Structures are given as C-alpha cells and as structure tokens.
Length: 414
Image 1 (cartoon, helix red, strand yellow):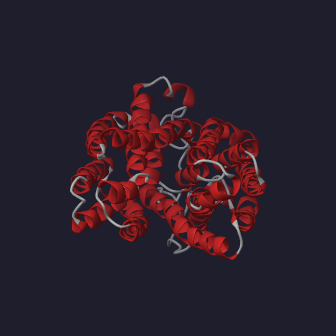
Image 2 (cartoon, one colour; image 1 turned 180 degrees about the vertical axis):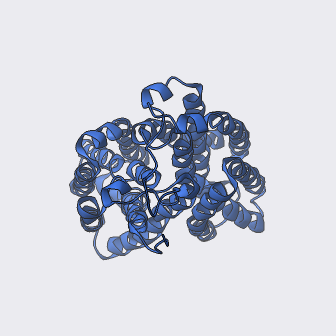
Image 3 (spheres, rainbow, N blue to C red; image 1 turned 90 degrees about the horizontal axis):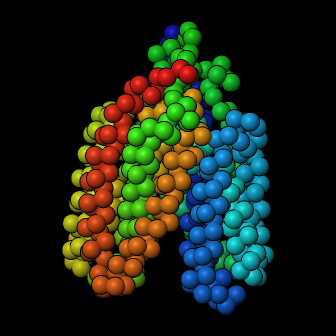
C-alpha cells in the first residue's frame, strides 16, 4: 500500500511540539524575565527566588514517579487535562501571590501539573507512535518546541512586563497556556496509534496488515537490572553537566571573562537558536547512525565546548563556545527519552521513564549550584567545566553498557 504523506502521526508530533512550547516555554523560561520584578515588588531575595524555582522542580520530580501509573489507570487525555488545569492554575496563583508560602505552593502546583503534560507524556507519545528507526528525529522535532516556546514567550513576557506588571503577565500567560493546551489534551492526543486504527510509523506493517506486538521489559524487572542504574547515572550526568553550563553561561562570559552584558546576551540567544536545529540533528544521527554514533557525537561536542569555554576571554572563542554548546545542549531533552525507549520498548515506557526522569531532574537541580560554588571558591569555572567533560566521557561508556541488552529488554513480551 502506498504510504500517505501526512497521517495522524504528524498531528501527534505537532501536538508534542506545542506541549513543550507551552509548558517549558511559558512556565520555565519566562521565570528569568519575571523574577526581578517579583524581587522588587515583594522584597524577597534572589535566594528565595531560587527556592521557589526549586519547589517546582521538586514537584515535577515527585509527580513524575507516578505519572505512568496515573496514565495507565485514568488514560492519557484525562491525565493531561488535569495536569493542564493544575499547571495553569498554579501559574495564575503565583501572579496573585504576596508571600513565600503562596509562591511556593503555586510553584509546587505548576511542577506537579507539568509532570503530566510536558516531557514524560511527550516521550510516551513519540515512543508509541513511531518505530525505533524514527524516534530520534521525531523526538528532536517534538522537543525543539521547548526552545521555540522559550524564544517566543520570553519576548511576549517582556512586552507584557513593559506594558503592565508581573502579576498581569502571569494571568495572560496562564490564559495562553490554557488555550493552547486544553484542546490538545481533550481532543487531539491519543496515547497509541491503535486508537486511530494506525500502527507506529516506520514499523514493518505501518500501512497495512497487523501492527507489531507491543513489547518491552516491565518496570519491576528493569529496576532490578544493572542497565537501569547505568541509564540513571547517564541521564543524571546529562542533566548535571548541561544545566550546569547553561545556567552559568552568562556569568561565565560576563563575570569571569569580562564580556559585556549585551555580548553575553547575544551569544546566549545564538545558543537557543542553534538548539532548535541541534535537537533535530542529534535525532537524525541516532536514527541514521545509531546510539554509538550519537554518543560519540555528543562526547566530541562536550570536549569542544569545554575547550572553547576555558578560552572564551577571546570573543571569537566565546562565540564558538556558544555555537558548540548550542549543539551539545540539544541532548538534554532528546537523549534521555531516546535511550529509555531504545532499552525498554513500548510496554512499560511511561512508568520507567517517569523514574528515569527523576535522576535527570536531580542532575538539573544540582549541576548549576555545583558549578557556581566552584566559581565562588576559585574565581573560575574552569575546574567545573573540566570535571563536566570527564563525567560526560564516563557517561559515554555507561551509555554503551546500559544499552548492551537493549535488544533483549525491548522485545520482552512478559
């Protein structure tokens, strides 16, 4: 049968792109723009602002442990709808908050809601709707939404802040998020292609005949294997190193190497733009060349990133630092779900990835703090950058070891 050019598979990818843009783009990325006004208006400290952000991360991590089970019991659409309402309500509540208690409570609600409508469900949808040969590219496209959303909604937030204040900005962005997400949650998303009479795109019988049997190791079995702990370490390092660099990028260029704020902002904007294409490139490498080639690609990038970072007192090296890191940073949302899908298959992916994602988020939470402490103690990030490169080289080996039995685990039927 002749393959159709556009099927519901691509509707799902568009939905995932919008999901990532609306959640990470609005809830996470606009916080940097809004927080200075919150500090000035409420009289809170920068440390308290970071605590508020940490509460959201904590809520996301804890909720992520249970998202797979919740989806299995209540269905993906119901779970995502409730998550959307929680997240948007939490974001609006933050705009109405005047105390640390309500700020933390609202961010906790945001974090819990995000777990149900962002990275985990997007990973589940890509894993269910596409064959292994297409998962990398489709993951890259879907998760590029987080960067595009960040670029777009940061500008919208900035305009709203100039025209109104931080409270109105919260209300408007919460409304935008709800308008984008509720139709997707209620009407567009389908957990599996079989619900639309389709098979995973790229599978042997995708356009006719029987769909492939849904296979994969159970969470109970996988959590007892060495592969799980190797994967957990790998994704922790990915979050730890990449966010350690990203959240200290401007500080490195300005405070350590003496570049102007405008220059640092320009280079960081380039990082964000490059990540859009970097995610798709990395996904294509995984699909066309395999996990080994993708791992080598990422390892080369991290070594180059560190080499440029330590010499970025030179403006040309600083720009190179931004360009190469833009490509490297693409792995944060592409590699963890891809590796998990490669190893565990479709059957229990949601529950397993929810647990794996906790290790990634733990790395995200502590990486930036560790790098900043190194800078505070030594006056330079170089020690942190070199340590990050060493960790990523080790993670390259643990990636290979964690995927060694992928073929066996991915095809299990009980």
